[in-house]
Image (cartoon, rainbow, N blue to C red; front, side, top):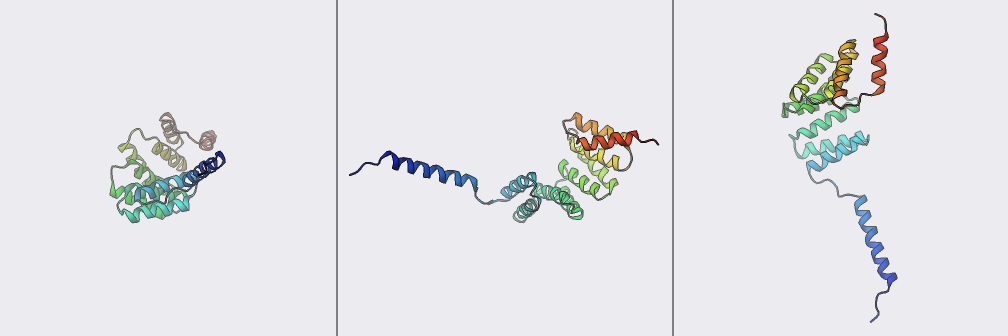
Length: 184
């Protein structure tokens, strides 16, 4: 009987490693609502919003009262500029869990993008009431106050968000500074 030589053993090891890495490159398809949610969030972070929407919808299809999926769906629709859908999904998240600050934050963003600042303010303030340490709603308030010409309040909320660790976009700070410089 012939013994296996080093070349054959190396070939087997190399093939095993290749199969292992191929399996890692192509993870198994999502099987649960949670899998679809996590995939949707990952796709959204990578800017693949259309694909993220599909995953959030699949999560909701599997688990109709899945608050986190409605929250993600509302945010994704908002990123696409689909205001009515964003409001609808965010309202559903709020309806399912009225104590979820992120749902109110997303609802505020949706209203703000749609120009309904009164509703946006209410949603952002509710998010802050539910989670006083949540920085993003302060930034949302800053943007809405800026859009409505209340620059002092915009600056105050931008400063609060920043003090809580939120990175204010330079573009917004420049716009706010420019607005302050205008006579009037």
